[in-house]
Length: 146
Image (cartoon, rainbow, N blue to C red; front, side, top):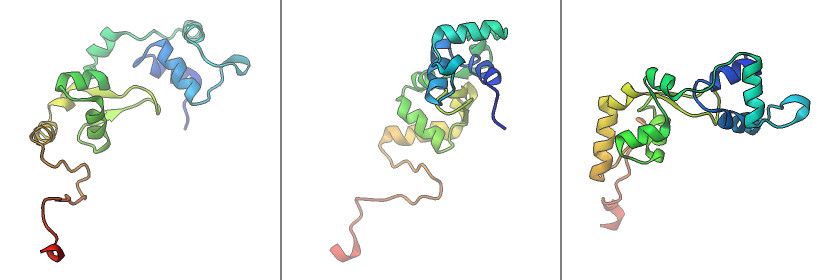
């Protein structure tokens, strides 16, 4: 069942600021009053009207969560690498809605699978994203070539 706009803004306010909330709602096509687009000030007014607390980085940290950017910084890799690990289920992460910030439990970043993935990647070894995918070794010569 889809969330009401009030529930959605309440959930988004736990993970991002008003400007990001407006961007996310507009990207999904949620209309503000009178078919207007959302803005940072409209989100602020909406939150105040429904008594929704603003985003707090301190609260976010207390919940032991990291953003994609924070996770990349902590592991000293690119955000694309973190995204790949999320897509391949090496790191479990949540999003309130598509295009919202990823919520990554910091404990996920300490899992042995994450450490293994990163060590393989840094060695230049092949990293298989899908456990059912067979590695392609481009260094092996095809029997027909020999």
